[in-house]
Image (spheres, rainbow, N blue to C red):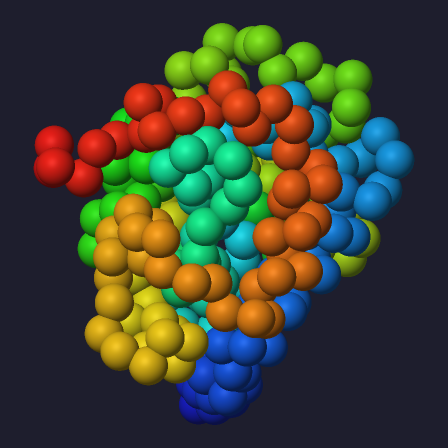
Length: 236
């Protein structure tokens, strides 16, 4: 039995590693669009309009590798310094963590909104732990869900997950988010960290344009996010 579990784990890991960065970008765009297109079950648009950054992990696997048996690769994106539009994607990895009702799922889509500057500072690091280094809470679902709650105002990161058609907030306590250097190299052809990408005007790859268009469509009030609201790289 132990040998079988190891073989299954290695097989799942191989499948994940076989995906290309371009495929994951397209999947991330599809995941976000599908979630936002379900009436009364999407991420509240008023929260999306207030978010500084978004992280999308399509098809996070159970039983792959890492503590907690969960592993996924995806992308983080932040608003441009001007506050209008979204910048280039930085490849990230998520490992472990508690997914609440999703524990029985074998494949889970994960979406996180980084709501403030302190959350952004964590995202720029090489590695941090949700619920440890950065505060995280399950996000509300639906158009009528209030975005003016203490949780959304004080929590650095709000998170959701979707598995087997069920979409709901998920705390992701204990999950680790880190740079995916291999994924960044595959997209940009040179060594780049999340900080290098998210705080510059680097040109986004063509494959991310559908996701950028969807983010522009569903996020409102972008004029409220100016460069003054963002963390100045010189302050780091």
